[in-house]
Image 1 (cartoon, rainbow, N blue to C red):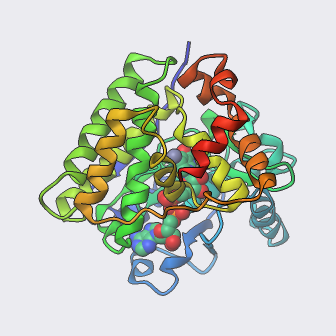
Image 2 (image 1 turned 30 degrees about the vertical axis):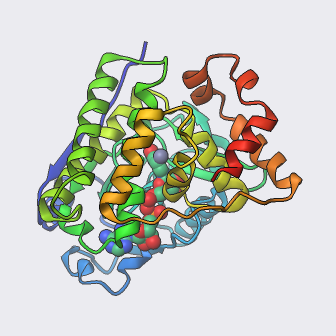
Amino acid sequence: MNNSKNVLRYMFGSGAISNLSTILNNIESDSEYVIYYIDEYFKNSSVLDFLPIKNIDEIFFVQTQSEPETSNIDHFRDILISKNKNKPKAIIAIGGGCTLDTGKAIANLLTNSGNAEDYQGWDLVKNPGIYKIGIPTISGTGAEASRTCVMINPKNGLKLGMNSDFTIYDQLILDPNLTKSVPRNQYFYTGMDTYLHCIESLNGSYRNSIGDAFSHQAISLCREVFLSDDDMMSDKNREKLMVASYLGGCAIANSFVGIVHPFSAGLSVVLGTHHCVGNCITMNAMEEFYPQEFKEFILMGKKQGIEIPQGIAMDLDESFYKKLYDSTIIHEKPLSNALGANFKNILTYEKVKEIFKKM
Ligand code: NAD
Ligand code: ZN
């Protein structure tokens, strides 16, 4: 039975980011400096003016062109060691899933020996990480609340995080003002990640009542946002989606995803497709497995006027389909959650190829 942990503290509301300095002052530590990981989008943004940055602090801008790789995390750790800045008072990550996951992974790696790839898996992290504060700037992945930090290891094609209670943020600042500038398509793709996590887990066999309750509430908020007659990015709707994302992240701690995420991970590892758009591309081929949700997903996209890329895996060389099959079918936990222990009898090579061709 799961002994579940959630984020210790969160502060929610428009303008909440202005409380960062108070939060930092309340942390007891022998160190004075903090390390910031900030989505590169904010490099020249006025958001930086709200941060209590001091000369002794270090700021790193995180690229989001490609999703975090284990070697990026090792590299960030090595820079901190070379600067003798590897025992900060706190790590603060400000951005989307890529940046939030980067902050989590580095906080763990600074207090645990070895490299990031050594901790890809379940409960491998031995020591608590550095105190960490997450400040999401886009809603949907639930990375702010979950106990993992997804990383790709190109050496073995593994896309897997450090699933550990130590990976959970100590403090969140949930400020819906920060999501105003997200491009509309991206807002939809990332927001849908919450919806998909929750419908996948509610359709699975590995369930528990608390996880289900988080999922139901997150889905209901997603419906309010994406089927809303108001703009999906209105002040009220951005607030709702931020709550949905947080609840969706809490739900993942108590559940597994299903079929969409393994296929999306295949796209990501083999074709470099980003997680959230990859989920939406996959969902277009999921009518057979999730008929009701498929209909609702199409309706939400239409209502918001969102384009989902099509045809990206329609006409590939056989070698690509083999790689796509391998990197999809490797995700045994979610696939058996959705289809049972004999999922490989349903998802044969031909079947998997047929599904990818529909994308
Ligand atoms: P992201 O970090 O990939 O960013 C997506 C894009 O949005 C980037 O171009 C970024 O610069 C931009 N952006 C972010 N905030 C913005 C803002 N306020 N204004 C303008 N642009 C903004 O975003 P994501 O979709 O949240 O994260 C995807 C990542 O999250 C993937 O790496 C995925 O594997 C990971 N993920 C993690 C978990 C988890 O539990 N840890 C769960 C699901 C996904
Ligand atoms: Zn996801």
